Length: 397
Image (cartoon, rainbow, N blue to C red):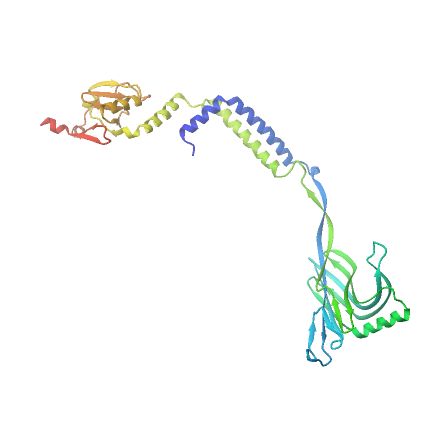
């Protein structure tokens, strides 16, 4: 919290620099008005941009394996070898594979047609930079085909098929000999085409996706390469509104700044007109007296002086600081009378008195002595920090 003295200094500074403060607040109010205009600008100020977002996605992948059919010293007959990069053609010649397909979307209802073709082809490097390979010839054979109606989002369908790898390799070599073709490299793949037709997320869909399982046979082994779960994302472009240059959080902040500036102008103007902006002389004296009293608190004791002491010869002191100096010289304490608000230093028959500004009279009236007060001890300071109690009853004896 701000202390009274700091508050008084702030009010004094505002009063002295009133014109400068008003000009600054007017400038802030104008700036805030510009911000408010930006915050409530017409919709025509909005800008739009095209953004690509993910609409839905499909996932297709292969699982493959081979069953041991011939006696050998390593694998018992009937052992299932699965998802290996290489298989042994002599003991497990038939590759057994499956293709699993599904899609993910907020909603959808589609029909799916899955067709798996064994493809033997001869390919080579392309001369045209736009193509990766050139195909010299190809032979296709459908080995599996299925139709699925009403495939829902999140559902998956699996299609199974098998390829006799040594038999396929022999067939490829026979075709190459018949064509007397030495150019290109032989390649065997299982191409799976997925035809998708229906509605996904409110849009009509009619598309075909293709996936490949590659088989590379050797004399005694064959290698299989295929995606396990290939995700393909379908994207679409949306028009999104973007805030104009005058909008945004900064405009709101400026608008709030303008409102605060106008409110501050109103408060300052009202206080200046009523004359309450700058602290009054009485208020300044009260604040100074309070802090002066706190500054000399170690030398002051509170109490009540009997009437006969206040009737002694009195010496008026101009300031509390001077009275404290007198108390130091006399080795006495300053006594603050709770009834009249004056400060006293009692030194023998003399009484030094300081009256703060604002008291009605320079001298206090003669107070009637309360019978009980007459029996109370007189408080006299000796400068030690403790007050001495002088009992008048001993003098009477």
